[in-house]
Figure 1 (spheres, helix red, strand yellow):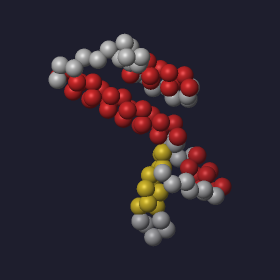
Figure 2 (cartoon, helix red, strand yellow):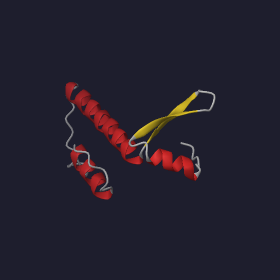
Figure 3 (tube, rainbow, N blue to C red):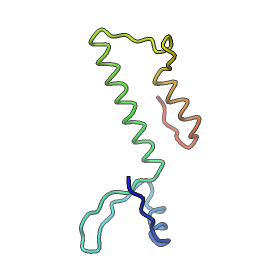
Length: 94
């Protein structure tokens, strides 16, 4: 993802936008969407949970049952709890 540095007036507008805003050029072209870091993390965590759920469901339907603990791993819920401890601003539940 590219890094764009914005000026102070735009920073104020974005901070007042709440969880997100649609950005437009002066000529009316829609440029994209801005989401707060908190909303972005929430979306990414929700996507990750769904991806893990799909994979685990597919494996179960194919008769594959993994015991990640015996392989030195942790469960998805344990991983998400660990990530939340590292980032206390994220208030998502597994």
